[in-house]
Length: 243
Image (tube, rainbow, N blue to C red; front, side, top):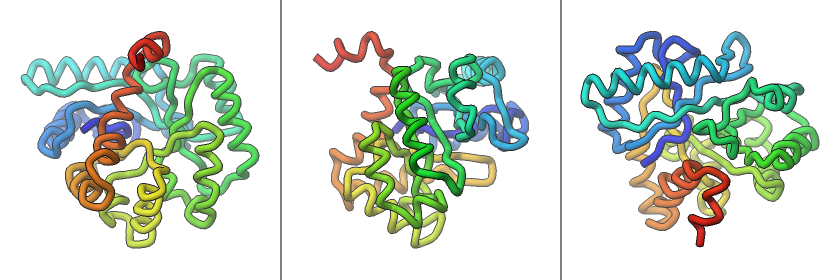
């Protein structure tokens, strides 16, 4: 499995406070069946703002420490960008890190309350720049929980949806679990991530088992691995790889 959303870099946001704690989280990830992790600390969320330079530096630091300890795990840089009015200008000025720094996908966290038309404009602005927006944990967003019909509308605008593993198995309550189950059944989920923090468990293996039982192997393989693998292919190689 590939974890598309994880707060595992040390001393950057509300993730681990030390390198040792970060390594322990990676050990837990391996035990849960994860083979690669996108490190996605917060950007422009209150007191948490991690610059691309900080993220890349911490990824290198963690990768080197894993190598020293003979722990095999691919760590790829990214960020969880909180949507603000200035998100496009921040991107244009090089202040936001896309997934694996490839310039093709960006993980975007919506505010709890938002205007749909404004979000649509931002999705279109990113698409114009060749960037696909991945909406982080839509099933947990207050506005989307009350207006689930907006989810397919966002998908129609080119957005991908990333749900949290814990949401699939009831870790955030039955209501969120039911919304997530319906999203999977309706083919509205593109990716699954742990959204791991030191105060949470990964739950990826448990979520995978449930999806295998309820939605089948094809869907499980796509949302837990294949779709994330496609993000690792640079834009210029994607058309060739699809042939």
